[in-house]
Structures are given as structure tokens and as C-alpha cells.
Length: 505
Image (cartoon, rainbow, N blue to C red; front, side, top):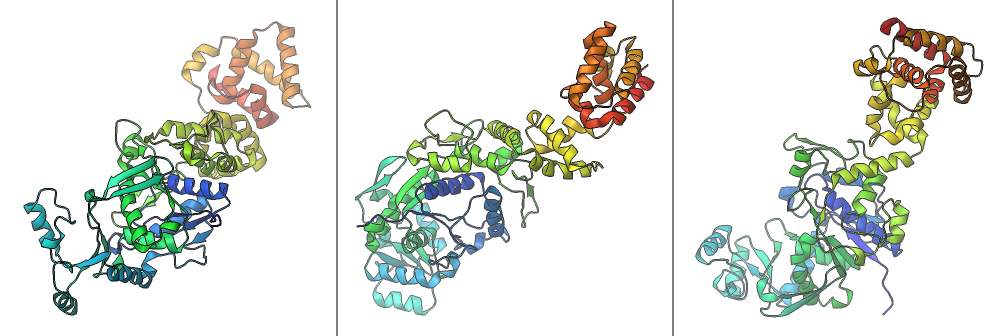
């Protein structure tokens, strides 16, 4: 048999915001597909109409657009295996439900929720399986006439998968190796509900993966318990030859303590668990997102890639293209990965340092405008180049470097006491005269002339430079002092010196 083209899928349910764990699953599918020259399918699992949330699907698509994860086919992307909404595939699923019923691999059950609850109370750890099914109201225990009559009366029913007991089911998992489960621990799962004429996740998934020619199912660890059932379904349909390979990814764990990462952890510790800000249409709650919190998409991608996977070396900073080259499912960990949100900030800091100054200026300019500052992009680009290695987020640039755009009106008391000496006012007046006389106001020329003046006068360089910084910034921070004066220009530099002398003398 010829080698099949790699085809993977990401199939979220439109039940709310996309959790960051889902983003990682999609990312790993993307990396795997790209590395093997394969396709990434975007499918929407919307068979559970009760849990549908308006706007969720659009939110998911927008999230991946922002992150730069591109799909090859699926909802909103087109393709030859559609429709890609499960709710639009009812007739396809009915055909396969019928196939299982006719082959005796599934049966119809009429038990009401109340009847099932009564059984659970009667039998401890009740499971609908080989040991209990003949005592229930289903097509195995009832005559054909009784079944036909109930259907004719319009009685609601479900179709259950018939699981033979005491059979060893082998699941081959790329990350976890061979997983063996005895079929007796599985119940006769519901595959289809007559109430909405829709299949459950288990049947829809198998049928779609088969018809869409999916070769690898890469999904979260929480789906591992359903893998044996899916193997049995593939067998029941006679699709063993096209059964995809499974890879169950490790869970994302709380940053502190045990258990799976939840939105509550983000709220409690102050970090987002969604890619974009989410406005819940049902409750009106607003949840923070990585985009709105100021993370760069490439930093989020890099951070997520290393939660549960490593490249086999100590490299941490990797572009999407590098991740594609290095990615290997066999290097995924079996154990859960602690969600170290501080490391996420570190990645953002590193990516801000690497980012083009002009691009950062474009991101910073709206923040300047909000603060009433309108200056040239050229000036903003220069300031960003001097200050970007001091911040983890673009929004932090304002507090870090607003002194470039707004002259200080007051002077930090602690710095003033320490740095402003008795003779500082006189020295600053002299310095202003030296700077005023300069025709060449480049940083290099200013530094050369001022250093020469200090040497000729025999002044204490530290005292002069500290007082000078206080006049320009209002406190003892900032980059190289002549980089500041070059950006400010001669007129503004002199104005700030004179103002400080007036206030501090």
C-alpha cells in the first residue's frame, strides 16, 4: 500500500472561548502537518446544540489568524471533504448508524433518563454493558414488534454501541506506547440520539476522521480513555487499514499545586488562559486574552510549543519555521506540563528585544496618542530602540520612557537629595552654555565636548552627570545620557536644564 499523505485535524466545539490548551493542541497538529508536507483540517464539532455559544466559532478562527496558525481546509477555508460543520453532516452519520445496526454491532435503547437514574441507585457503579443490557429497554431485550411499535409511537431513543466483554483492546500511541484496556471496563456508549437526529462525539469523530482521510489524531490526554472505544468502532466498520495513529498530549497543569490548568487559575494569579479577550454572551463576563494583554503572537507560539515538548537540545527561542523543522512527537512528555506564566512573560521580553523597531513603534504610537502625545514615527522608533530591552510588554514602554515625550514637572525627592549638590545649579547653567554653543548636536560630539569641559574644569564627573540626568528625566533612570539629549534635541535639552535650575536651586 502506498504511503498515505499526512492529514491531521483540529476539531473544537463552539461552546465558548478557546482554552490555551486547545491552542497548544492545534499548534502541535500544525507543526506535525507542516513537517510532513501534510494537511491541517479545521472541523467544528457542533453536534451538542445545547452547549452552542454564539460567536465562539468566529472567535476561534480569529484566534488562529492572530497566532499565524494556518489551516489547509475546513470551516471557512473550503476543501473537498466538506461540509466541515458536524451539524451539517446528519445524513452522512445516519447512514453509518444504520450500517452498525444492520451488522448487529449496535442496538436501539429506549431507556428514559429517569429509568437510568433508578438503575444507578439500584446497582452500585452501574454500567450499561453486557452484564446489564438484557435487563434494560432496548432492541436486544424487546421483540422486533415492540421496537417497531415504540418507534412508530414517536418514542425517543438512542443507538448504543454493542461492546463484547472481556476482550483486550490495544491502542498504539506515539507518545505513550502501547495502551491495553479490557473491553469489560467500557460501557455501551451512546452513538446517536433520535431527539436531535445527531450523533455523539464518538461516532461523528470516527466517521469524519475516516471520510476526511485523517492519518494522525493528535489530541489532549483527556481523550485517552475514549481511544479504546474508537479502536473498536474502526474495527466494527472494517476500517482497520485506515485507522489513524494516535498521540495523546500531556495535560497543561496549574502553575502551583496539582490539577489541570483552569480559567480560575488565570484569574487568581493574573494571567490569561485564552488567546483573545472573550466576552461571554450568556453571563456578560469579560476574560483577558494574550493579544489584549500585550503578548506578541510569536512569543505565545514559542512558549506553548515548549509546554510538554522539547527539541532535544537546550534551545529555547525558536521561530515557527524552526519549530516545524525540530518538532517530533516522540519528544513529547507523558507527564503533564506546569504552566509557568512567568516564563511566558520572559518569552515576550525576548521577542520584544528581537522585534523590528519600526514595528514596535507602530504598536507603541496608539499608547502615546492615548496619553496625549503625537510625535513623528522616526522619534518613536529611536526611543523604542533605546528602551525595548527594559520591558516585557509594549504597554510598559510608556512608564519606562515617557520622559522622552513629556518634560518632568517634579523631581524625585530621593534622587534630588542624593544627586543635587550645593553647586549643581551653577554647574548646570555652565553646562547649558557649553551645549548651546554646539553646532553639531550628535551624541558623539556632545559627549566629547562635555567630557573635555569637565576635565578642563576639574569637576567631579559623577556629580555633573547625575545632576544632568535629574534635569532631563526627573529621576535617576534612563539610557545613556547623550542618547537622551540627541532625541530631545538642543532646544528641549536646554529648556529642561533651565527649568530644573529654577525649581531645584
